Amino acid sequence: MSYGLDANDLEREIEIGIVSAFGWAVIEFEAVLFQKFIVMSGPRSLITEDMFRKYLMNMEAKGYVTPVNFQGKRAWKRQVIEADIEEPAMTPEEVKEFIVKAHAAMKKEKKREVSSEHRVQESKKLAERIVRTLEQVMPKTKKAPWEPSLIDHVEGLHRALIESKDEYLRYLKKNIPRAYEPMKKVLNSSGEEMLLLSLRMIESGQRVYPP
Image 1 (cartoon, helix red, strand yellow):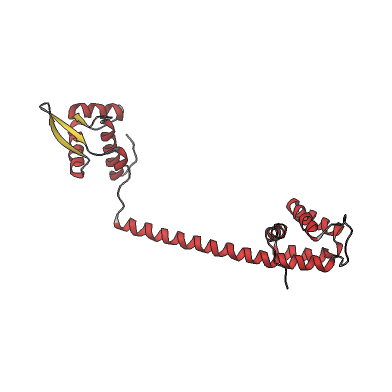
Image 2 (cartoon, one colour):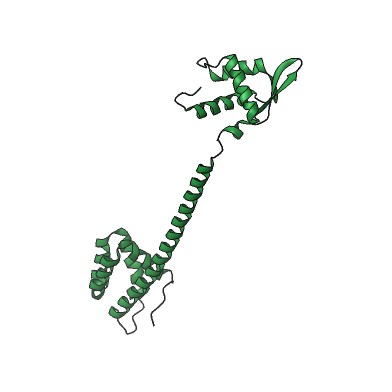
């Protein structure tokens, strides 16, 4: 038997215990049911036989059990299982509160969706800005086959930024020195997370070149 429960919780726990005492049986003698309940509750149980009978009568009013005369002795028929009474039905006030919370959760989810869409749009704009910047600083003439392309540099910047900001800046200074200052500004103004997303977007071919 649990302690520290309020009256309703204690009553519900006892009712669950009584239903559990039926075991697999549907009908059980009252005296046997009481003994099984006491055994299951443990030696600390303070439930007397009279109290037990009152609980049964209260459970009868709730439709959990019904009295029957079995072989000339008082018995009880189980009408529910433990799961049917483990959680009390919500009051009208609790139902209203649940609905309010559900609506609030839905609004919050919609805000997240809007925020996510906004983030994607901003990433696309930043991706276009990065492409323009790199195109402006890279040679216009046809490069030798071994020279890195714009996408090669995007991949290199992406890998470098995953490691650290310093590695990103080192890559720029070593491989695209003319892009160092503008791409450093991009990092400072947009932040690592947004820049990583935009670089990844360019890599995956999702960029839209500006007209």
